[in-house]
Image (cartoon, rainbow, N blue to C red):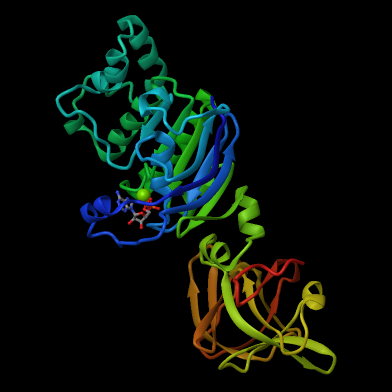
Length: 374
Ligand code: ADP
Ligand code: MG
């Protein structure tokens, strides 16, 4: 167990490194900018963001595989900027398994302990403790080439924790695996974390993975931290349009609107559309006539209603997924998506009226993308 702190960490790759990565998007900018966060002892942190936002760079800096350009990293209050990777007491498991092909699973697991001249009995005890946690106890005599992708990744993670690291770093460990296997291994990683009590960071671009595994999620974009919070916090109270659109499936509707006033009522009006929806009571004092706002509302929080809360609009798309139904209406150039578990059925062109769950609408400043706090 360890406590990890990053303070104003920056990373800029120099030009020589860039040439080697010519295929990747070359940027003169920082790959990671002013990143600060704290992972308490025994926490499970998810770093989530689109490809190229600096997740792996962050993890590699923590592991000591990448020099940091600015700032400081502390493990248990010790500044570790210059510490060699092997002296950081960190376990790593990355997307590509990198198991040693000629060695059995047992010897793969034992490799680092042997290198540290750990007595064989101690190695055996450590492997016997870890192997069942990741269900690799049946695989110990096999060679990596005989393992499935899921099994290889289990061995990879087991290898990372066999040394009882203070910090476990997982970089997209599930992204090679198919849907069912991902789900199984996800549950096993969660259980393993409870058992071994090791501060763990998982990097992923998959929000389901981050939401289901982590106690706290850090959302990054373009090298910068956007929001850090519990899964519920980032879902319910996104601080900006990016987080709002990134968390949730289907994503939150984000519609540019202008406030209009009709007979003492305020409405959201949308460019290129006749649709007008009443501004919920809760948001009334935040708006004034003519104000431009981005309206954020999750598909589950758009209600189809008989009340006179909007102008009537035709259904553009209706899909029945069995457990839920999705209805979309056209708003200018965009679709406003609605999901409902109610047993309703529509045809394209049917006329409906909409309302928004007043507790669940979000307003963003279209200039900055930042949430307008209620
Ligand atoms: P992620 O893991 O979120 O997909 P990375 O941390 O791998 O993102 O990359 C962040 C940025 O740094 C990207 O623009 C990427 O092209 C760049 N980058 C990553 N590794 C290197 C490297 N070794 N040399 C130069 N640029 C790199
Ligand atoms: Mg990466």
